[in-house]
Length: 255
Figure 1: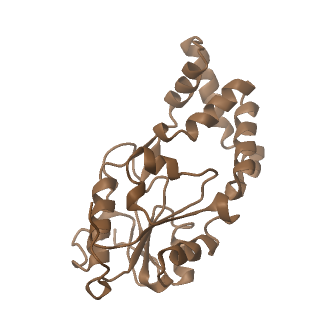
Figure 2: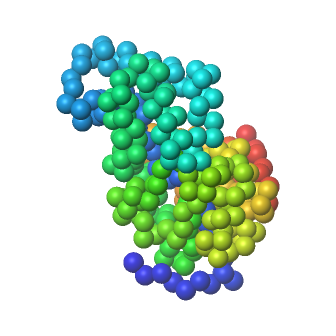
Protein backbone atom coordinates (compact mmCIF):
# COMPACT_ATOMS: atom_id res chain seq x y z
CA UNK A 1 0.00 0.00 0.00
CA UNK A 2 1.55 3.35 -1.01
CA UNK A 3 1.10 6.56 0.90
CA UNK A 4 0.99 9.91 -0.82
CA UNK A 5 3.08 12.78 0.53
CA UNK A 6 1.22 15.07 2.89
CA UNK A 7 -0.55 17.87 1.00
CA UNK A 8 -2.39 19.83 3.72
CA UNK A 9 -3.40 22.60 1.34
CA UNK A 10 -5.95 20.19 -0.12
CA UNK A 11 -7.37 19.11 3.22
CA UNK A 12 -9.44 20.57 6.03
CA UNK A 13 -7.52 18.55 8.63
CA UNK A 14 -3.93 17.34 8.81
CA UNK A 15 -4.70 14.24 10.84
CA UNK A 16 -7.51 12.09 12.24
CA UNK A 17 -7.88 10.56 15.68
CA UNK A 18 -10.24 7.63 16.18
CA UNK A 19 -11.74 6.13 19.29
CA UNK A 20 -11.42 2.33 19.45
CA UNK A 21 -14.38 0.54 21.04
CA UNK A 22 -17.76 1.12 19.31
CA UNK A 23 -16.05 3.38 16.75
CA UNK A 24 -13.67 1.07 14.87
CA UNK A 25 -14.11 -2.27 16.65
CA UNK A 26 -16.79 -4.18 18.50
CA UNK A 27 -16.63 -6.96 21.09
CA UNK A 28 -19.37 -9.55 21.37
CA UNK A 29 -20.26 -9.40 25.05
CA UNK A 30 -23.38 -11.51 24.60
CA UNK A 31 -23.66 -14.92 26.23
CA UNK A 32 -21.25 -16.13 23.52
CA UNK A 33 -18.48 -14.41 25.53
CA UNK A 34 -19.10 -16.76 28.46
CA UNK A 35 -19.53 -19.79 26.23
CA UNK A 36 -16.14 -19.23 24.58
CA UNK A 37 -14.50 -18.81 27.98
CA UNK A 38 -16.03 -22.07 29.23
CA UNK A 39 -15.07 -23.94 26.07
CA UNK A 40 -11.45 -22.85 26.49
CA UNK A 41 -11.54 -24.34 29.98
CA UNK A 42 -12.97 -27.58 28.64
CA UNK A 43 -16.17 -27.12 30.59
CA UNK A 44 -19.66 -27.91 29.37
CA UNK A 45 -22.21 -26.79 31.97
CA UNK A 46 -25.92 -27.17 31.37
CA UNK A 47 -27.36 -24.38 29.19
CA UNK A 48 -29.51 -23.15 32.08
CA UNK A 49 -26.43 -22.83 34.30
CA UNK A 50 -24.60 -20.85 31.63
CA UNK A 51 -27.59 -18.55 31.22
CA UNK A 52 -27.89 -18.02 34.98
CA UNK A 53 -24.23 -17.08 35.37
CA UNK A 54 -24.29 -14.79 32.35
CA UNK A 55 -27.38 -12.97 33.64
CA UNK A 56 -25.67 -12.45 37.00
CA UNK A 57 -22.58 -11.05 35.29
CA UNK A 58 -24.74 -8.67 33.27
CA UNK A 59 -26.76 -7.61 36.31
CA UNK A 60 -23.56 -6.98 38.26
CA UNK A 61 -22.52 -4.29 35.79
CA UNK A 62 -24.87 -1.90 37.58
CA UNK A 63 -23.98 -2.87 41.15
CA UNK A 64 -22.65 0.20 43.01
CA UNK A 65 -19.52 -1.64 44.17
CA UNK A 66 -18.73 -2.74 40.60
CA UNK A 67 -19.24 0.77 39.27
CA UNK A 68 -16.98 2.16 41.99
CA UNK A 69 -14.22 -0.34 41.26
CA UNK A 70 -14.33 0.33 37.54
CA UNK A 71 -14.23 4.09 37.86
CA UNK A 72 -10.82 5.13 36.56
CA UNK A 73 -9.68 1.51 36.27
CA UNK A 74 -8.38 1.95 32.72
CA UNK A 75 -5.46 4.05 33.86
CA UNK A 76 -3.27 0.95 34.16
CA UNK A 77 -3.38 -2.73 33.12
CA UNK A 78 -3.16 -3.81 36.77
CA UNK A 79 -6.14 -1.78 37.97
CA UNK A 80 -8.19 -2.79 34.93
CA UNK A 81 -7.48 -6.48 35.46
CA UNK A 82 -8.26 -6.27 39.17
CA UNK A 83 -11.53 -4.41 38.63
CA UNK A 84 -12.86 -6.82 36.01
CA UNK A 85 -11.82 -9.96 37.87
CA UNK A 86 -13.58 -8.57 40.94
CA UNK A 87 -16.71 -7.96 38.84
CA UNK A 88 -16.74 -11.52 37.47
CA UNK A 89 -15.97 -13.11 40.83
CA UNK A 90 -18.59 -11.03 42.60
CA UNK A 91 -21.17 -12.21 40.09
CA UNK A 92 -20.43 -15.85 40.90
CA UNK A 93 -17.71 -16.91 38.46
CA UNK A 94 -14.94 -18.99 39.97
CA UNK A 95 -11.34 -17.83 39.54
CA UNK A 96 -10.70 -19.94 36.42
CA UNK A 97 -13.83 -18.69 34.66
CA UNK A 98 -13.07 -15.10 35.67
CA UNK A 99 -9.58 -15.38 34.19
CA UNK A 100 -10.98 -16.97 31.01
CA UNK A 101 -13.50 -14.15 30.60
CA UNK A 102 -10.74 -11.58 30.91
CA UNK A 103 -8.51 -13.45 28.49
CA UNK A 104 -11.31 -13.51 25.93
CA UNK A 105 -11.89 -9.78 26.37
CA UNK A 106 -8.25 -9.04 25.63
CA UNK A 107 -7.93 -11.64 22.85
CA UNK A 108 -7.48 -9.97 19.44
CA UNK A 109 -9.68 -12.65 17.89
CA UNK A 110 -12.57 -11.54 20.10
CA UNK A 111 -12.72 -8.11 18.46
CA UNK A 112 -14.22 -7.40 15.04
CA UNK A 113 -13.78 -4.23 12.98
CA UNK A 114 -16.89 -2.69 11.48
CA UNK A 115 -17.18 -3.47 7.80
CA UNK A 116 -16.30 0.06 6.67
CA UNK A 117 -13.20 0.43 8.86
CA UNK A 118 -10.63 -1.04 6.48
CA UNK A 119 -11.79 1.09 3.54
CA UNK A 120 -11.92 4.27 5.62
CA UNK A 121 -8.48 3.85 7.18
CA UNK A 122 -6.94 2.75 3.87
CA UNK A 123 -8.40 5.74 2.02
CA UNK A 124 -7.04 8.17 4.60
CA UNK A 125 -3.66 6.43 4.66
CA UNK A 126 -3.36 6.42 0.87
CA UNK A 127 -4.13 10.15 0.87
CA UNK A 128 -1.26 10.85 3.25
CA UNK A 129 -3.43 11.52 6.30
CA UNK A 130 -1.80 10.54 9.63
CA UNK A 131 -4.06 8.38 11.80
CA UNK A 132 -4.04 8.05 15.58
CA UNK A 133 -6.02 5.94 18.04
CA UNK A 134 -7.20 7.52 21.30
CA UNK A 135 -8.79 5.07 23.70
CA UNK A 136 -9.80 4.52 27.30
CA UNK A 137 -8.65 0.92 27.50
CA UNK A 138 -6.98 -1.24 30.12
CA UNK A 139 -4.58 -3.22 27.91
CA UNK A 140 -2.44 -2.83 24.81
CA UNK A 141 -4.79 -2.97 21.79
CA UNK A 142 -2.06 -2.85 19.14
CA UNK A 143 -2.24 -6.65 18.69
CA UNK A 144 -5.91 -6.29 17.75
CA UNK A 145 -4.98 -4.02 14.86
CA UNK A 146 -2.18 -6.39 13.89
CA UNK A 147 -4.52 -9.38 13.97
CA UNK A 148 -6.82 -7.65 11.50
CA UNK A 149 -3.99 -6.31 9.27
CA UNK A 150 -4.73 -2.69 10.21
CA UNK A 151 -1.66 -1.82 12.29
CA UNK A 152 0.24 -0.57 9.26
CA UNK A 153 -2.39 2.12 8.69
CA UNK A 154 -2.02 3.66 12.15
CA UNK A 155 0.69 6.15 13.08
CA UNK A 156 0.16 6.38 16.83
CA UNK A 157 -1.68 5.00 19.84
CA UNK A 158 -2.61 7.12 22.86
CA UNK A 159 -3.97 4.60 25.38
CA UNK A 160 -5.21 5.43 28.86
CA UNK A 161 -3.43 2.43 30.41
CA UNK A 162 -0.08 3.71 29.13
CA UNK A 163 -0.46 7.37 30.13
CA UNK A 164 -2.36 7.12 33.42
CA UNK A 165 -5.12 9.36 32.11
CA UNK A 166 -8.62 8.78 30.75
CA UNK A 167 -10.82 10.78 28.45
CA UNK A 168 -12.46 13.28 28.97
CA UNK A 169 -9.19 14.53 30.46
CA UNK A 170 -7.15 16.25 27.80
CA UNK A 171 -3.88 14.31 28.09
CA UNK A 172 -4.64 11.59 25.53
CA UNK A 173 -5.83 14.01 22.86
CA UNK A 174 -2.67 16.09 23.20
CA UNK A 175 -0.42 13.02 23.28
CA UNK A 176 -2.05 11.71 20.10
CA UNK A 177 -1.59 15.00 18.27
CA UNK A 178 2.06 15.11 19.34
CA UNK A 179 2.56 11.57 18.07
CA UNK A 180 1.23 12.64 14.66
CA UNK A 181 3.22 15.87 14.69
CA UNK A 182 0.16 18.07 14.24
CA UNK A 183 -1.45 20.93 16.15
CA UNK A 184 -4.76 20.09 17.87
CA UNK A 185 -6.57 22.68 15.76
CA UNK A 186 -5.59 20.69 12.66
CA UNK A 187 -6.99 17.38 13.95
CA UNK A 188 -10.40 15.72 13.68
CA UNK A 189 -11.47 13.44 16.55
CA UNK A 190 -13.92 10.68 15.54
CA UNK A 191 -15.77 8.83 18.28
CA UNK A 192 -19.11 7.79 19.69
CA UNK A 193 -19.17 9.25 23.21
CA UNK A 194 -20.65 12.76 23.62
CA UNK A 195 -18.78 13.16 26.90
CA UNK A 196 -15.42 11.41 26.54
CA UNK A 197 -14.77 11.94 22.82
CA UNK A 198 -16.43 15.33 22.44
CA UNK A 199 -14.19 16.63 25.23
CA UNK A 200 -11.46 16.94 22.59
CA UNK A 201 -12.90 20.33 21.67
CA UNK A 202 -11.45 21.70 24.91
CA UNK A 203 -7.99 21.16 23.46
CA UNK A 204 -8.92 22.79 20.16
CA UNK A 205 -9.68 19.66 18.14
CA UNK A 206 -12.68 19.33 15.87
CA UNK A 207 -15.07 16.48 16.64
CA UNK A 208 -17.27 14.15 14.60
CA UNK A 209 -19.54 11.90 16.70
CA UNK A 210 -21.18 8.71 15.53
CA UNK A 211 -24.58 7.47 16.75
CA UNK A 212 -25.16 4.31 18.72
CA UNK A 213 -24.75 1.30 16.48
CA UNK A 214 -25.93 -2.31 16.80
CA UNK A 215 -23.49 -5.19 16.48
CA UNK A 216 -22.27 -5.89 12.96
CA UNK A 217 -22.49 -3.96 9.72
CA UNK A 218 -21.07 -0.59 8.79
CA UNK A 219 -20.26 2.09 11.34
CA UNK A 220 -21.07 5.10 9.20
CA UNK A 221 -17.47 6.19 8.69
CA UNK A 222 -17.82 7.18 5.04
CA UNK A 223 -18.23 10.94 5.76
CA UNK A 224 -14.89 11.06 7.59
CA UNK A 225 -12.81 10.96 4.42
CA UNK A 226 -14.88 13.74 2.84
CA UNK A 227 -14.58 15.89 5.95
CA UNK A 228 -10.82 15.47 6.12
CA UNK A 229 -9.93 15.66 2.46
CA UNK A 230 -12.20 18.57 1.63
CA UNK A 231 -14.73 16.85 -0.61
CA UNK A 232 -17.46 18.94 0.95
CA UNK A 233 -19.83 18.22 3.78
CA UNK A 234 -22.06 15.32 2.63
CA UNK A 235 -25.76 16.08 2.38
CA UNK A 236 -26.56 13.23 4.74
CA UNK A 237 -23.99 14.12 7.41
CA UNK A 238 -26.45 15.36 10.01
CA UNK A 239 -28.56 12.28 9.53
CA UNK A 240 -25.54 10.04 10.00
CA UNK A 241 -25.62 10.57 13.75
CA UNK A 242 -27.07 12.47 16.66
CA UNK A 243 -24.25 14.97 16.30
CA UNK A 244 -22.54 16.48 13.31
CA UNK A 245 -19.08 17.86 12.90
CA UNK A 246 -18.30 21.41 13.85
CA UNK A 247 -15.38 23.77 14.12
CA UNK A 248 -14.20 23.58 17.71
CA UNK A 249 -17.58 22.81 19.19
CA UNK A 250 -20.13 20.05 19.42
CA UNK A 251 -23.40 20.69 17.62
CA UNK A 252 -26.57 18.66 17.80
CA UNK A 253 -27.91 17.71 14.40
CA UNK A 254 -31.42 18.71 13.49
CA UNK A 255 -33.98 15.98 14.28
